[in-house]
Length: 573
Image (cartoon, rainbow, N blue to C red; front, side):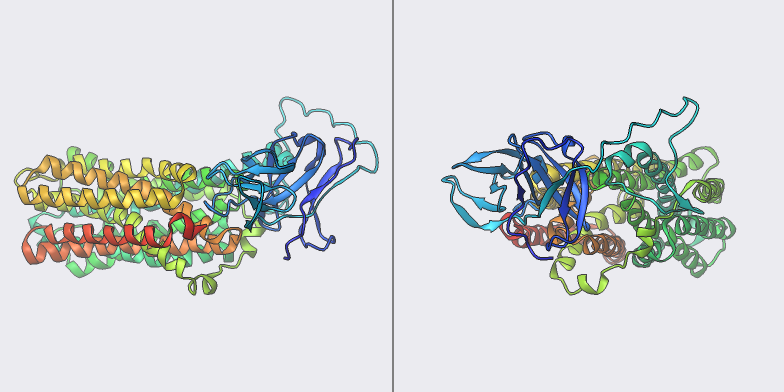
């Protein structure tokens, strides 16, 4: 689409409040999208509209003039122009971005300096007009009886044929209720998937001397499901576009029965290590649920609510890790280390209920089915690999530490953590805090910028790794534990801030941004494998984890350098 030379329209003095505000999407005046009523716009304040998949900031000034500009702040990459402060500068109507306070001419989109002069930077402008209604508006229909619920959107089977989340009236009437229902069921399935995926981080604590597996072998058992889950994330993202969100959620939820029943069948003293490896690899199917769930829920919510919805989806899903670790602690404390099969069996009825709930109450969206991942486009973009590297440092650390921390405590400080119950009573704390802090990372990135928050996170993670290394050498268990908990919290913050950098990189290219979310999630999960391999080799070679801690410190330093060098404010802008 070509830029329109001006985004302003001088509305008549008596524009009817019910006039339709339309934005030209083709740039030639032939393709107009209705975004709201003229009376819905408050003079001096902006709103956000979605036109041809791109966010547009729409303003009405005190004189009735309409303006339409790109909603993306080109300096910070945040979609915030509609929340800017309007006014005049040198007689020109302007809007000031709430991020770094750059000022833009509402008529041309050009950035203006303090003296009112135009600069080379500019926002794209859109043609905008007010179309008067042909006839007086029809009277409001009578409200439904109290016992009735709002009409459901049109559907064909379980596929919604009418879905307009960007339409405020539609969203308030029926859309919000349907989206919340699908979010709840999607989160439930993803949460259980995370629990199944990370279950081996708990089960290795049950494997006593009678199983004949050394610490290196146990680290291998936790690494295998991590790598399988990471690899599956990319095809799981494609599956939503191919089969639909509801259908794939039902299938992927039902598939979780396979690893849980296999675990229950083989966890007996005398089982071969090869058998345990094969069963552990099947648990990787739980790791793919995150990618499909995020891709599905993204399509249900309007642009202004996507960040919050995806934050809830990811955060509650991640909590599946500490929940399964708490469940393992309960089994250890009540039944003892001799009954590991109770843990996977406890999840069987939960999986069945989640599958039935998705089958009965979830919906498919045609828009999701028609989406085509832009994988070929993003793999040629250097930013894809830069963001993926940073996500290895954040999510890779979170999931890798979640899988390995119990074994690290048990091996590094065996004299103080000599029973599985002592270990399990502490290992859930880090994953829980990391999950809870993830939404705050996104919120901080909204306020301060994703690159700034991510840079601070990696600098702090490097410092925490140095603390963990020093505590390990001095055999300070309390300081060691505190350092690792700090790493969990920081990785959670970094998960949120790194994901918020993706829209800043790809801007209004929604298809690329969505594909990068799935791709970075897959590569980041593979970082968990590197964490477990690092621990395995360090304990195998030296009997302690000091080499691994030093490696983490160096890697976080590299991530901080990449964040500063590639994604600094000026480069990103």
